[in-house]
Image (tube, rainbow, N blue to C red; front, top):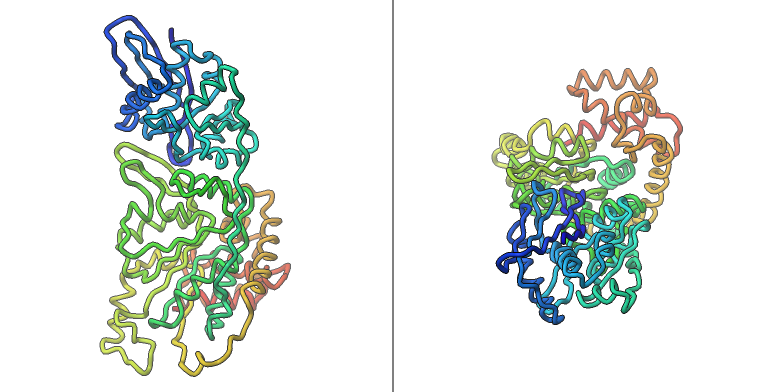
Length: 500
């Protein structure tokens, strides 16, 4: 008899269906798993054997063969334990074959038969909903998977509970979604003394999801400003929260099934490898640019990063996704993030400080900032100088607007953009607009066109730079509540374009 159960194999954030076939045939006693399993999947037979023994279920003295179909799809991870056990239990007629075939299962078995939580429950639930099947998973993963409203999620604590559920001895209540986590911001932009121009740049960047590059002397407040950027960003929309949580699910970053509405904020160290930033490794896992999807990626000391790592950012910044190609895996991850970078003006950091003149100026700055390629610099929408703050200014009381006041303007501007792009799938903020749509939403008038022409001739504005100026000008107009983009909006956008 051949029985069937179903599970998924992960390729990026996509959960591809896998049919688990189990045949119990005459022959010498054996238990083999075929279908391109990795080491963790091959070891499942020992965990399944031990779990069944704890339940006093003896395997028949026959040849047991488990096939994972499609056979040419690599199978990785310990979540294949539970579907293999279900297919085997159906083959030896412990549970109904129909129950196993109507379920997508994933979960790791302990030797005592308890189910250990696994990664990927959320994308697995979406795959189950699309196929019209219920999802069976460990109880600890049920709250995470239950966020998919169209899926029926059964969270079991052990294999014995699964058997009793399928044989009608008990009923496992469907899992409920976890809590919505909204972490209040603890850092306020009002804490930053001075730096009004940099704060303005942060506001514009947050409103339109524009990329920002800050250059300033050590201690001028670049990292402090970036750390307060999340305090002015709006919370994730339900669709964005689901996208972000799917990536976090694959990395095991969802705690107790709760979905966080705060936008991701990632700040990797400059010693991070290419696989850590872009994604990769043996299983082609998501990198920092994907973990920052719908949020912020902050790269402090940008010139200190490896040149090869920085160059790999160019394509994701344009396309909003990254293709990770390895010898044994080709996957695609979403990576629509806001890049915020900071750098000193030179290696010693004293170039812009009159009290500490740089001994090798201007060559020191050219050598240091020259580590960043021109094409990457061209992808920053906003560039701002962050001058040193004097000790006298530090003694002054906090002044200026709070993060809540700025966040309100940012939220209103984002609502305007959401309404503008409602009929354009895939577009959410002004940073996503391109082509004819960009020309339609930010058409320069005669005065603005003259200004742009003069800037292009004097500062060598590229075609990419021109379009980024249009996007930033549109965002500035949205912050002011203006229907049309005027010359002052373009002038401010250009002032940030030609700085640093």
